[in-house]
Length: 148
Image (cartoon, rainbow, N blue to C red; front, side):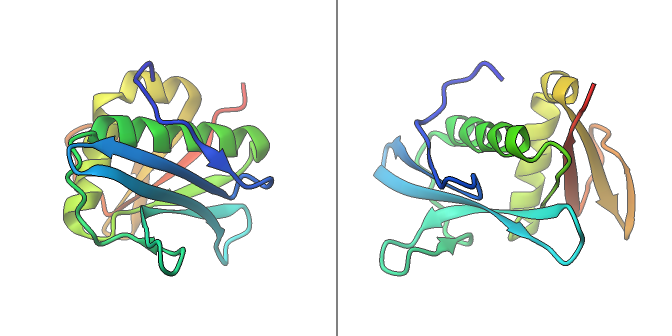
């Protein structure tokens, strides 16, 4: 994706990334974490505002900082970095609310042709997984780097 992105700071393992959203409400600290799940090779992508008191992710706050596309591009940059280090990993993503899941779907749809050059994307509907298709409402997503 050839979109502007924020500079990233990451842990050595590339399991945690931080950046600062700069928008109409000022600087907002963001956090992306890749968390192992109980399924081998599957990692949960957790994302949200960083609670500066606890250091944890707040994935329910609505920032509305006017830079959602730049934030999305930055999160996608973490997916590239993570899968560079862990090329066989599957990344599980879903929104903390239906509205956020819809926003993720819209982002995938908007950049579908670019993203599918590098990633296999499947969506979950009613407990079944299928290749991601535009204009379908999904409950969650799995993404894996193509190894060609």
